[in-house]
Length: 382
Image (cartoon, rainbow, N blue to C red):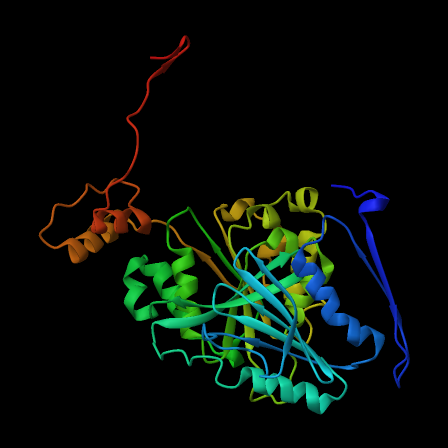
């Protein structure tokens, strides 16, 4: 909705701090939310120079009753927007913005008149505010990227992931051996930045990547990009995801694996025409100038056949792994059913074998909700 001049609010401020002064202008209209206003107001003391030092921290596993503020804080603004609570606090020489999310995470941003004070406020707010996650070998930390109205956002989640030894039998002999070799790789073995998993739906491509996240957990952080079409269409978003965290301590540096699922349009033969610069930016990330000096791998899953993919994607030297994940052959599917079902009735395995999804459905005996087939003639439905 476009605002009329009467509906638009214009706030102008100017401070005269000890350091350089900046004029600031904040334009508000009916497209802005209460959260946007809190975000803007939290920056005002920093922009003006009144509180020129800023420190921020992301917290995971925040206790529901954690105050996330000093005892002497006074509240300036509050907002509760679809499960995300934003609060603006202030104290003597500092301003604090707290954003609490429904998933138990929070972000704290402090502006203060000294760096020492800003860090002290952060330490007070963070003290005893989180719960240590329980150690569980079947759980692995995975990041999830998306682009929101507030720019690139990364959320960290703990997901369940089976060890490769537990799921290796869900794949055919040849592809299972290839995936097993991939699971055993370590940072010093990387030669090529692209992992390509292609094959029909339901064959276990995503399951293999979850197992990979667990097997590589000690040297590689796995992040899933939820909107890859936006990632490669937005240079600023791509730079944020690609740059990652720098450190001069090589013992603390970790590789990152960016997972892009079902990216058929991005890498098929007609990608140049359908996605513009998307394909070029993907290739630049894997072995171009953007990828230089970055410890970044890219894993792509697609349902397309290899022959329909763009030649630049599958050229020699680009792929660390190129895996065709297909249905289990009839003999392998029968052996899987015999192992998993034992004496229970088993479905008939056709000449094309069975996908992992079909096998699991047979094992779990989950009822399928569906309507009866409807006959159709040239005159319409019967």
